[in-house]
Amino acid sequence: KCSVRQLLDMAGNVLVGLRFRRGLLVLLACAPLIGLTLHTAHEERRRVVAAWSEQSQRMTWLADQEELALRRQALALLMKVSKLPAVQSGNRKGCQKALEEELAGYPDYANLAVYDTGGEVLASALPVIESGSQADRKLFRRVLARGGRFAVGDYTIDKPSGKPAVTFGYPVLDEAESVRGIVAATVKLEWLGRARSELSAQIPPRATWTEIDTNGLILARYPTS
Image (cartoon, rainbow, N blue to C red; front, side, top):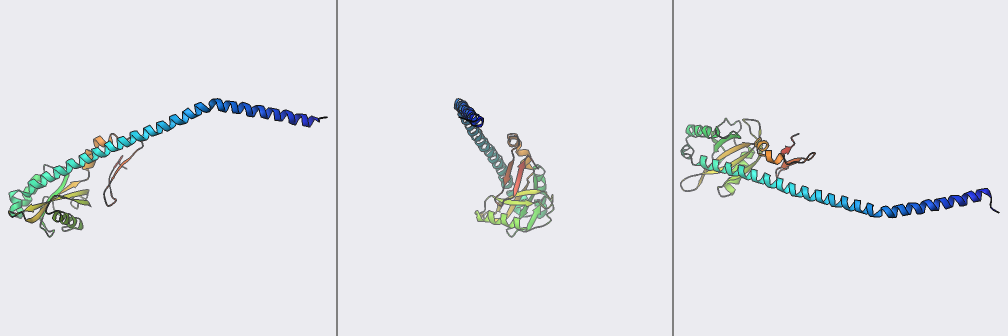
């Protein structure tokens, strides 16, 4: 004979078994849908990653082109300045006047200056607070190390304006093609904000674009913060 408790236990086991089988049937029925959902999510993630990779490459290309345009502009300006009669003659007053006139046509430039090979200022469009700085010496060494050719300096703070800047250098050559001095153009880093208008427009929501130099210094960030 079975007691009432035993009957209840048997009934409970039957119900649990039925629930398990029913749950298993539901799981088996939903398995294709779950698999499809996981596969779709994986494919969507891969698509998003591929799209962002392509977009970031396009943005990097834009940044490269904009910086290349700036280098070309700086090179053209420095080549022109290095051949000015006042710069070639070494006349300080005439050289300063020529630099002032050239700088007036380039609002993104912080200064134009001419140095001798020892780093001393011969002439400057704007007053130079500190001559022969470490940043200047590095630029001079790069110009001379490249056989007297165009070179790019490091990130620095332009003393007259107090603004972040990068300086480009180019040799002043005499008739024998020997380096007799260096002409330098200091460019404000503010130009990045204006030049990067097309680039910044492509940054997705909640994303940032950061440009860092070889010394680990942040040159620009979008959105700015």
